[in-house]
Length: 315
Ligand code: UDP
Image (cartoon, rainbow, N blue to C red; front, side):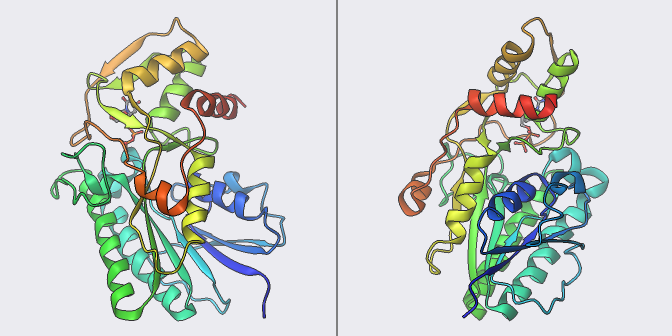
């Protein structure tokens, strides 16, 4: 019987993917195939892994089927632009294709290999939520015609495909809904609030807040999220999810900006700009299910996680 595990990670050179590759390689039994077309990811994120004999990078766009003779045991399907600045606008159709064709191609691969497949879904499936905090049972409030829909509806359709593969072919699926995550290897140019504010503060620029800054998000440090992803993958085959993974500590964007300002330079000014359309007003995960079933909850405080992230961006 083979001792090692072959794990395919789509989006492996992105923010979450590169952190996941790095963590999984700590186990000597794991062999990683990292699939990415570097649309939003970058080789720089995995430059320290490239020479590891148990790591292989393959440049590939999951909109196209991925054919391999390797016997895959687990697939983490993470590939998709995830920042509003990158997934909308001229990339919108590409985003939907990545969500949907990417899901179909990876589900077919999982089915062929009898592999487990984990889908990185998102808190965006809840849209501008009318329920607070958001539980997995909430069906969501998404504007299907809005600018965010390419991502939100793409991810919702991917969930539906996962469940249909499970019902029709018994494919071993796992769905996690990831809430706002931050930490080292975030792309400094992708427009997310944490990376924007830290980079602006380090440069001594004004901090940009969209709208009145009273909208809320709950920020999860990357190492905590990675632990949750791996726990979900290793859980019993009949645990399909969906399951929320996020940090339930909720902050307004004003509060976040003030914390970052205090840490880097209290004299910086805040510049208020227009709120993007369909920007959710409140977001906070209910993680009762993750605590109960996965025995998982985030351990890193926002202050501690921001310190580590500021150190990463400073260097
Ligand atoms: N945001 C902000 N300033 C920025 C970037 C984002 O005030 O420089 C706001 C954005 O409008 C949203 C929140 O911060 O209300 C989180 O934005 P992000 O793009 O990080 O994630 P998402 O909207 O997908 O949760």
